[in-house]
Image (cartoon, rainbow, N blue to C red; front, side, top):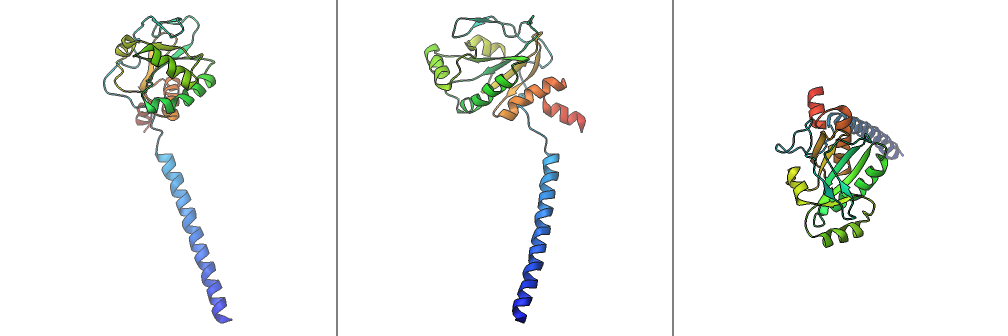
Length: 197
């Protein structure tokens, strides 16, 4: 009977110690979560400068509609220009987030997808990914004008055609960081957090 009582006491002490360790770990995870800022879209060192007018080119989408990304818009809407490719697996994984953002941000922003290459391949990509209704431009000149070197690359233009945010976007968080950077009036979230620190 004494051995059973001793083992019960030992188990209760062990349970209390483990509970204290778990609480300490939960607190530490919370502290780390506060310290680690969201990464945001990756800004490349070279390329267009945020805050300056974006190149305004007239391009046609696969449906034949004309678009002028970079030109001032009288309707007061911003434009998200997202460069993708049918052969880019990250681009394909990002498309559901783009469709969701297009729907969630429809009150102030339009989305234009851009690529280059064979139009038939691009049309098949649009069909297979369910991108009907989203303007899809095939133009190598547009990618050159925006100095796109890696994909998926996004440029957020305001209603005046000013580049407000840009960068590589590999996830929903990266995409949403462009919207937040525009709202905060900074080039990137990294710039915002480094100035706040």
